Image (spheres, rainbow, N blue to C red):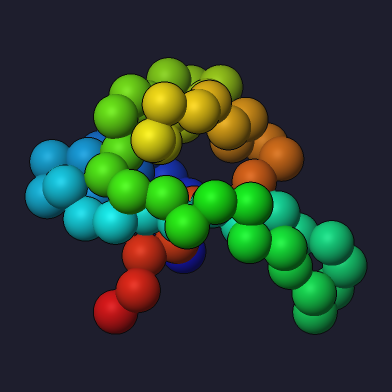
Length: 64
C-alpha cells in the first residue's frame, strides 16, 4: 500500500501499475480501478488513467 508522498512519488517515477481500492469495512475493500501509471500527485488527490481519486477516501496499491 502506498501511503506517504515519497512512496507515491517513487511509484510515479518508476511508472508501475497502481490500482485504487476503496475500504468498505475493517476487512472488506472494493477495487475502484485496476489503474495504471500514476499521472499526477497533489496533497489532496492522485490522478490515474485520467481519473482523480481523493487520497483521504481511497487506498493506492501496487502488486509485488
